Length: 320
Image 1: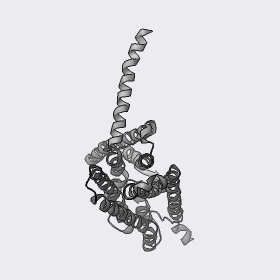
Image 2 (image 1 turned 90 degrees about the vertical axis):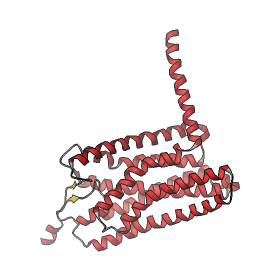
Image 3 (image 1 turned 180 degrees about the vertical axis):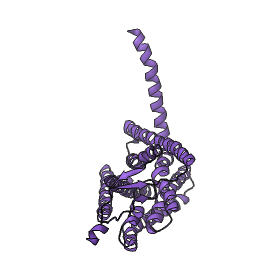
Image 4 (image 1 turned 45 degrees about the vertical axis):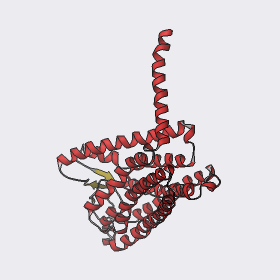
């Protein structure tokens, strides 16, 4: 009877959010609403441009399009609810909703990690082995990259959800964050958090750290190769790869810190969580594509076509 009582089921959790200050909540509501809209619009534009312009039908832009789709998904799994919660006093989420957030968070982050590695491999082959690029990076290989990233993401997220469903909760249900994730949820459980912390480190922390080290090494090789050339194209590639690595660092840095040290301060975790769930999805289209000459050229062509269509439409209507 005592054991059954200790394993009582929690039906909902209370999300404490980023701050209790009313003024800060108004500020966060405004800023995060703008960031969310900008993220969805900019990434949607990238997807539309790449699909509509045949000149962008290459391996790099195919991977970038999938990255934009993942970024929109990553920005949507928790941010809309957080924005809505700023308009209400009772900020709760059901147990099933909390598990769903854990699933989608690890699905999209796991998928993005593998996709970033595929993009790094694509740039490595393009710069270090340009003569073999067409034979190595084929359309079939790109499809394998994308499918593999989603398969790995699903497998990783399922392991996290299965683990979360086995946790017994005794009653405390206040989550000191704006969404559900294992590092904050497992500290509400009735079992030894040390063992749970080891699970977090082994299944998420070490994986993120290992992938980051591989990405870091690949970018170092690429940058060393670029430095051996002094052409204008090499300087452009250097600028692009440096910007890519900044995005990789901003995405992996918070993940590694949160999951390698799951017992750290909730304040630090909340700040870092904002980076890879809100800021990084808007940085990716800016750094990866909107600064790209080919994408900007495609945007100008699309804008000219749109303006010419809008000017032709009234004249056609008058002729009738």
